[in-house]
Length: 65
Image 1 (cartoon, helix red, strand yellow):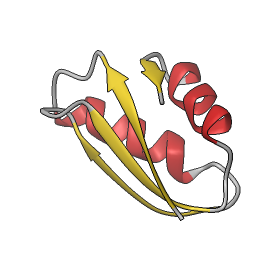
Image 2 (cartoon, one colour; image 1 turned 90 degrees about the horizontal axis):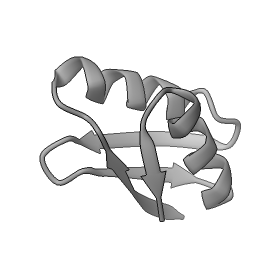
Image 3 (cartoon, one colour; image 1 turned 45 degrees about the vertical axis):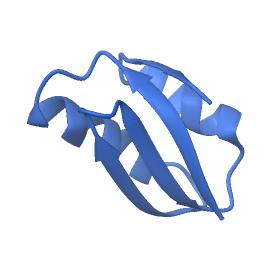
Image 4 (cartoon, rainbow, N blue to C red; image 1 turned 90 degrees about the vertical axis):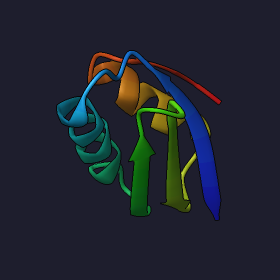
């Protein structure tokens, strides 16, 4: 299953990498694609959207489904 969330506050490639790494650490995630220009992160795997949002927020960014 692919879930897309909105991630606000990414301004550079390092921001994308930080969000990607935070999401990859979530149990059940199999693949992550982050795009700062569209402010979106697409996540493959069996995981609750609230868990993804929490991981991004813990990394210092604002996120919502």
